[in-house]
Length: 263
Image (cartoon, rainbow, N blue to C red; front, side, top):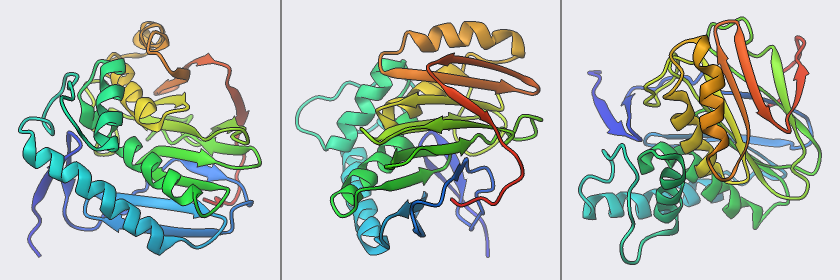
């Protein structure tokens, strides 16, 4: 089978199946049903209180249809690397992506993975009280018990050695990761992982990209964090490059030992 390339999310995807070994890992046993939903470039790993795979797939198809129709009608939206201004009626997912890009100073497609994860997550929360939706390193989480997220950082010795513990009992939260050394997302930087925490998954996604663009060496960590702190809605930042790490925000960081990955 000949391989071709598809441009989407300011990324380049190969149309042949690829296992996403770079997914962040979530540790916890409280959500018993887990399943994968793949629609074109969208590749979700979902954990919920019930098996809602069919509903999740319909949700992905619906939100992708809204987005794809908008992209066909608005030339340049998919390639825009600077903030996009929405004019006139538009789908909610487009407005969320545009707002996130405006806050972070990047194009709207920098928020697409987080926007899809959040849109599907909210749809599933109508049917279940707890859900985790992972989309290429971007996580939308609503869990009644605290969860620990192991951060994948490519070949860094810190990769999956530290975890971010979150309590999302009161409201859903998002943890999004951008990397200049692994994965498909477009990044102008060279960080192994830039992880952001926010109540908004599209915003966390766009912010991770924006912050990551400023990291070329470990010496850039402090300045990149200062830039990220100014993005309204960002509640926490973790930057990993090789064996160096920088953090900001009210974050609970825990060491990870060898354990079974539950999600």
